[in-house]
Length: 354
Image (cartoon, rainbow, N blue to C red; front, side):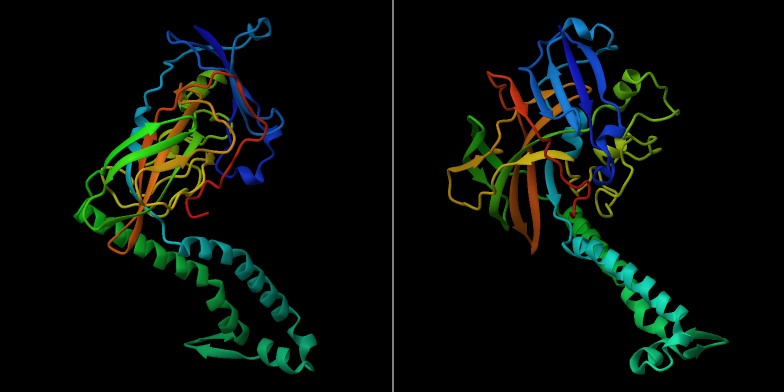
């Protein structure tokens, strides 16, 4: 059966990119399975995804063949299923300090440049004039005041990465078994009726979210009539050789640091954020049964193709051995009876600590 898929998926640094500068990818999808209920998320002037029926105006669109399924795609099962360690919150603090410290460094260089004009200024003259000798070289006095502040974000990131690596190694040495869980999928919610966590693992909350995963690279190349090892599709990078850790890297969109440093393991232990996602309200209830609501706006049900992958998942937040983890479980939500239209695509930063 045929249907039309249109998508303008946000790249890694989408906050600094004008959506209108990127074309909308449009294809006619040919599949043996019936298409889902039509839906549109976002507007054509921004980031945008649409799955609808074919009309006479669509005959010029390129045709692709793809499986349409509700079974979770393999790359999502590898990267969004199981236990994940929460990144150290110091990463976010360090990133927020980058801009102020750079401004401080530029201001200090400006003061050093106009130092002769500050001879009669009591405090500034003492700061900007004079130097300290270390070995054969003289270093400006101002450097000793501003440089330690400038490198502070780097020091914080190193410390946070060290803590993240230690936590990952701790998990690798004694992995946690999967929880025993039973739940019922309702109308935009999940009711957890049974949840048995491993020893020393304590529930602190739960949440469900819906989002759109990264399109498949080969299909995007085919739809834009481009070849591998040439110019990549809009919003994608060239594939990274011999590195298959995250969904973004696997599909050639890993153009930035989406997660902190990851330890070499059978799978990544730091959850890569979905750039397009709508979350339900966080539920801190720990007494069964627990009803976890989805996003306020009605979202389409679970459906996957090589272009559009609409993905639902359950997040169980816990503490273990003094650190925070989450258990992620893909969900299969039924399709809606009526078409879904969401005017604005919900976006989040592509870095896990933001």
